[in-house]
Each structure stands twice: as C-alpha cells, then as structure tokens.
Image 1 (cartoon, rainbow, N blue to C red):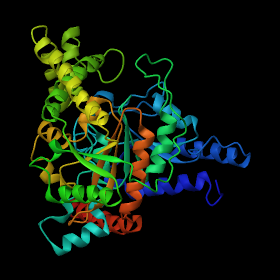
Image 2: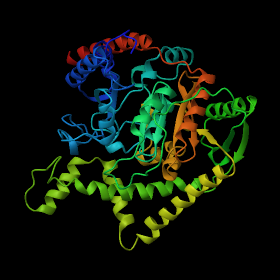
Image 3: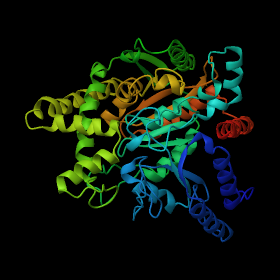
Image 4: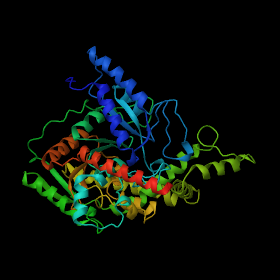
Length: 480
C-alpha cells in the first residue's frame, strides 16, 4: 500500500524462497504462472487506485485438500493424483476475490488424516526449525544423534486441529473457524484477524451455515488493560504426558495474566477424557460416509480391473487409499452398521453434547477465555515420531485441540517461547462461540507480551545451502 514493494516483486521473492526451501517438501504444487498473473493484475489495480482490500497482492498458500479451479488438488493421495477441480472451494474463492496471490498447494497427511504431515503420498514435510540457527546451536551443545541429516523434525498437522498443531510446532499464530473447521496460519494475530474477517460470513447456498451478525472486518483494538478479564485454566488438561517445559510455560502465562490484574481460575471440563474416543467414532463415521464418493466412476483414480463393478470399486479404493484412510473407512462403516449405530454413533453424539455443555457451563460461570497447552511437547524428530502408528499419534497429539472442534468454538494458538532445544512451544486460547473478536484481542495482547523470537530466514537459507550441498554429495556417492 505504501509502494515500498510491488505485488510482482513480492510474488517473485516468495517464489524464490519456495524454490530455495524445496527440500522441506512443503509444497505439492507451485502455481507460479497463476501467481505472477494475479500479481500483475493486482499491480494494475494499485496503479489505478482500485485496490480490493488488505489482501490485494498478498501471497497465500492453500492446503491441498481445498479445491482450486484449474490447479491440481490431490489431498496427498493416489486417489486424486491428476485431479483438476472445475471450481474453487468457497474459502479459496473468498481470498482470491480480495486479490490474494495463490502461490500453490501445500503438503499434508493423506486426506489430512494424521498428526505429523508424514503420511501423504508425496512424502513427509520437514519442519524449517530443523535447520534454524537456534536449534542447531542447541544441538551442538547437546549432541544426541549419530545421524544429523536424518534427525529433522516433523511440522505437526492433524485432522483434529491441524492449524493449531502446526502453529505450536513452527512459529505462527493460528486460528480456527469452527463453522468449517478451516485453519488460518499467519505471522501475527492481526493478520489472522484480517483473513478471518474475509472468510467469516454466511454462505447463501450452504444450509448448514449459522447466520450470525458479525461486525466485519475484525478490527482488533490494542488491549491495554486485562484486569477485567477472567482466564480459565482447565484442570483436566494437566495430563501426565504433558512435558515439563510446556507445563512451566503454561503456568508462567497464567501468572502473567494474574500479574496484570486478570482473574485466573481453575475450571473443570469433566468430559474431556471421553473427547478423543468420541471424536474417533464421529470422525471415522463421517469419513466412511464422505469417502464413498471415491468409487472410480466420476473422477479420481480408477483401476484397470473390469471383471465387475464391485471388483472395480474394491480395487480402485485399495489402490487409491493408504492404510490410514482405509482403516478409518473400515472403522466408520463398523460404527454405522445397523446393529452398532445406537451403541456407537448415537452415543458419541450424546457425549459430544456433554463436551459442548462443559464449555458452555464454564463460560456461563464468568470465564472469558480458556488458556491451555496446544500440544504435549515441542516438535519431535521424524524417526522418533514414526515409531508410533498413525492412530496412536493422532490420539496423543489431538488431545488439546479436537475438543474445541467438537464443541464448535473458536481457538487460537500463539507461539510463546523456545524450548531448551531451541524449538517453538505454543499455547492455546479458547473463546466463547461467536466471540472471535474478543478471543483474538486477548491473543494479540498476549502475543505482544511474549515477544516470540521468529525464525530468521537468512539463517535457514544458509543451512539450506549446506543441506542441499550434502544431498548432492550423497547423490554423487550413490551413483559411483
């Protein structure tokens, strides 16, 4: 807006950075031509004084399970390799309507079913903090791996709160819109508010949209006084598996609010322990229902078997889905069987209502915002992460994030500090339904207080050069 950089220059810088960090495997598809064309159109609008808004000319990336017209959308699965949607997902269209530049589609677990971004058909994603100066210096002080090159960290990501999980393991503010369970990752809370203000409105052709009057855009005031706030600390979130570092930072954050005059109280969400099991039943049931569309007939992968329609269905789904997705489909179909429906699916719906009521009761008691951990620990090395199967990892890593989705509440994760290993640790704020603005205002105040040290991209670039050089040398030695 100030003319310090043009949309095209910014777009080119981002594309250059994407290429330099290709080894992180963060992108499945880079839409370079599309982004540069969008940047050119944005530049013309600025010259004519016809900017579309705050996002005009701003680069964005979209997770590859959101449809993008004319751009391959794979969900990191063989089932959708080569699939090019004829339309944009509503959230994508809203961003493009505001002049955002689509840089590409980012990697994920297959159909977003996992908690580490490690199970997609295009390979695992490496956490950029694996190559940061902060982490590398700590590793030199405390060497614990014989093979440094293979000891990179996971990024996080899950079907029960992926944006929050990634935020906690990287360095971004993350908010989730419960209406669609879409996550937003941005550099700061103000940016998250801008994007949420664009996405947060009713959709006339969606009968499930809640028509709630929201003041747009989300303008966040600078909160100077938190003394009138009541911060709730759920006692059920203090689980034995919670790392001592996360617990310490959680306690310090509560003390920070208390020192500034806020009322900090312990609260109870008694049905928390049932949440992950309840989520598994409901999620897999939904998976089984929704994934029935992938039958090899209308779009997506189709096997070569032509003995019968049933044989073609079975082979297509066996070839197209990985073990994790097939496992969830099987689980969901089991829960939806006529003889199991009442005992599993209906009971899970009832438990979900109890979980939601727990939050309602806490907020009705006078609590404004809940403060919880986002994850059990800092990001873990990939080789350690894959020692556990996907289902076990998801159950562990979703423990603090999926109850929010179950209750349909807004939440935001804020990076707080670096661990003893030099890695980000985040905390989560949970707000009342439709009180996103209040939640983000509190998060903005907290973000300002903690002054989290962002990763320096130049440090990453220097380390990238060394990593790429090592990969070339390894390639040469293998060829010899």
